[in-house]
Image (cartoon, rainbow, N blue to C red; front, side, top):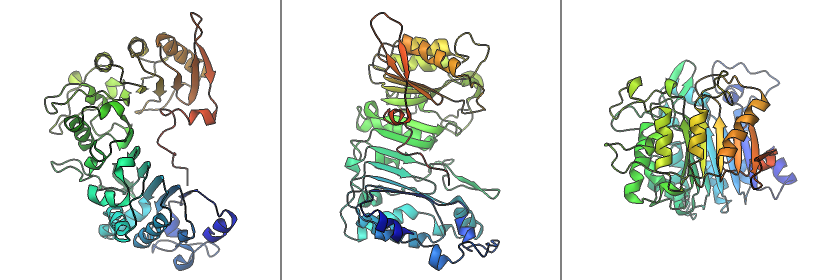
Length: 420
C-alpha cells in the first residue's frame, strides 16, 4: 500500500498515519488473538509497512506504533534521513503493545524508545533536522537532551508537546511517567529551556505535573524573558498542580511569579485538587479562589498576555452566560491591555451542560465588549472574530473551520490526533 501511495503521489509532503489500537492483535502478535482468516494475519507481510519509499517529507505523524518497535525505529530513522527538510514530527506507541510487553515483563522493549531513535539517527552521520514542531506522544519521552540534539537542531524548535502521563491498559496502570518521588520522572525538560530552545513559543503537556512546574518556574533564572514569549497549556490538571501557580509568589521557587504569553487557567476552584512541594494535598480552604487567580494574572501582566484559555464552572442560574465567575473574568479581561485571543473551554471535571448557541454567543459578546484589544473569542466549539466600529456595540462574526485553524489559541497543538 505504501508503494502504491508513493507511486500515485510522488510529491507527497505530509504523511499522517494512525494505526488501529488493536492492530498487533489482529496480526497475530498475541496468544489471545483469534484473527479472522480473511483479515491481515501475517506480520512478516502486512505488519511491516515499508515507509522508506517516501522522501522529501515535511510532516510525519505516526500514532499507535505497535509490536516490532526496533523495526519501527529503523524505519523511522531511514525516513528521517530521506527527509532533511522535515518540519513537523509526531510519534506515539500503542497502549495495547505497551500492555502486552508490561505483562510479559519486557518493559525494556519500549523504555527509552525515543532516545534510542535519536541516537540511531545520530549514528547515521546525518545532520540534525530543523524541526519546528515536535509531538512526543504516548511512551515517547526524551530522557537525554543530548540525544534529542542529535535528532534535531533545538535552536529552531518553536512548538513541543510532551505526553507526560502513564497508561491504563487491561486493568493495569503502566506508570512510565512517575513524578511521585524526589527524582522526578527523568524527562529532560531542560532540553526545552531557553538556552537550548531560544525560539520556543508553545509548550503543551498532557498533565501539568510537578516536574513540569519546577522546570518552568526555574527558567527565569536562566532567561527572564523566556516566559513572556511562551504559551503554556495542558490537557489536564489532575496531578495536583496548575499553570496558574506560575503567576503566584512561592518561597520554593524564588523566580515566581512568571508572566506568560498564553496560558490555561482553571476557575473551577471548588473542584481543584492542589498539592504542596512535599506532594501532600493542600486544604480546600487554602486553595487560591478565582478572584485571587485573576487578580494575580492582571497584576503582573505588563502587556505580556496575548491568549487566555479559561475553564469556567457552568451555572444555569447565573445572571449572564450561565457561567460561574463570569463577572470576575469580565473585569479581568478589561484590564489585560494586549489580550487578543480568549477561549472558554468545557468543564474539565465533568459533563458539559450548556448546549444553546445563543447562550454561548451572549457570553462571547459580554466578554468581547469588556476588552479593548480582543480580536478572537471562543466558547466551547463556537469561534468568532470580534469587530469594532467606534462607539457602536461589538459585532461577532463566526469563523469557518479554515479560519479557526489560523488562530493560535484555538487550533490545539499542531494537528489533533485523528480517531483510529
